[in-house]
Image (tube, rainbow, N blue to C red; front, side):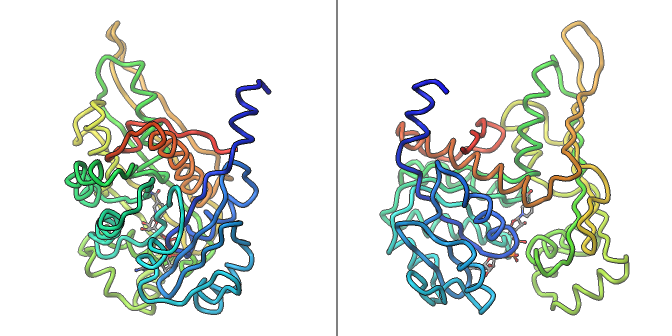
Length: 336
Ligand code: NAD
């Protein structure tokens, strides 16, 4: 290892927080625990938060959450119905991963505004999915700059990892004809990822975000039962389109996203991939395909990417660069 790399690795770890402690939030905390460059100091859920400057014990947080909230954690836990607001006021955190449900579709933007109203300055990363949700954040760009917040949006798997891969693939072409994202997700039970599944249901014909949010758990179960636990999604409203358009790769109508989600089997029903078709400067039409390994879970692909962007965002913030960026504009950095 070069002296430069060692110096960077040995520097004080970045103090990070995870908002939302459901399926993705817990996976994020577990993923970050063995890393030396980042220290998990803050977590929050709907009913409380936990904060410890020396770092949180992930297993103890998971146990506290199983009792109802991370707020039950002994030493650092606090029960609260305004957990995010109180955490912002009572902590020192360099950057947060927002593993929160975007239900309603304006929720994440409202959380971002909560940060902007506080004196806090730092980095926020989301794994938001809908085009309309990213568009709300785009309207806040100058507000983020004024608040000295570096906000990176669409930093999960899709949008996120696959969108960034599409930007890389586009480099071979003079013109990009299509970007086709197909994802396969396998989870053992839907309760582990309630928000993800509700937000997926909202894409089914005849459903909306409001309708999916209003469904009771037993209604969700009855719907899943109709298709043996499998959701098949086509032509989804996914922000990969606006992100690739903004990055200048292609018009948004050339981007399509669909997938299959099995809520009763952790094995992926199909391989997740992005196919980028275009014309080279010599006039040849070709397709690049980037396929994720079938053994990689949704949690691994979303949370790994989110922290890669969090590290990149902290780098920008330290150089005085604030505002709103998408996963298609910035290269994620690998967290050691
Ligand atoms: P979940 O339902 O398992 O957990 C949500 C968590 O948020 C819970 O801990 C809950 O207590 C907490 N929460 C809810 N409201 C809160 C509030 N007001 N204050 C504080 N905490 C609150 O959710 P999940 O399945 O882990 O999904 C999280 C998000 O990740 C969803 O929006 C989903 O769409 C997104 N996601 C993105 C991708 C991607 O590739 N981009 C993939 C999967 C999931």
